[in-house]
Length: 94
Image (cartoon, rainbow, N blue to C red; front, side):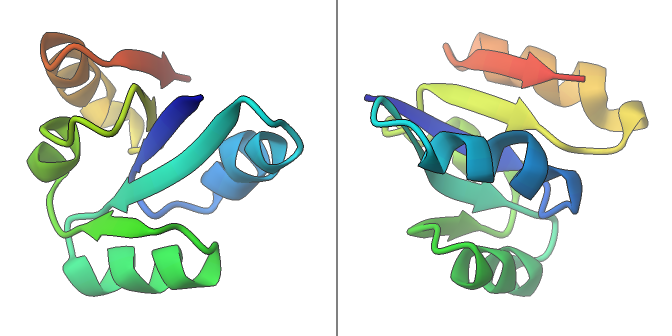
């Protein structure tokens, strides 16, 4: 099972990752992180995601995440994609 964490409680994530993952049996979206814990919590509840974080670093340190989908604004792509790679995660970034 490939366990996915999403950086950013964004509008693109459901179409890009969440719905496609639900059609598969070998991947699962397990966490979402936002700069604001309340945003992450609401997004997680709405999309039936078990874990949420109010900061991106916490998602990076979660050993239960194999792959990070970077749904942050383009200005944050390099910084957080590199951080995910340094944390030993696979990365999907637009």
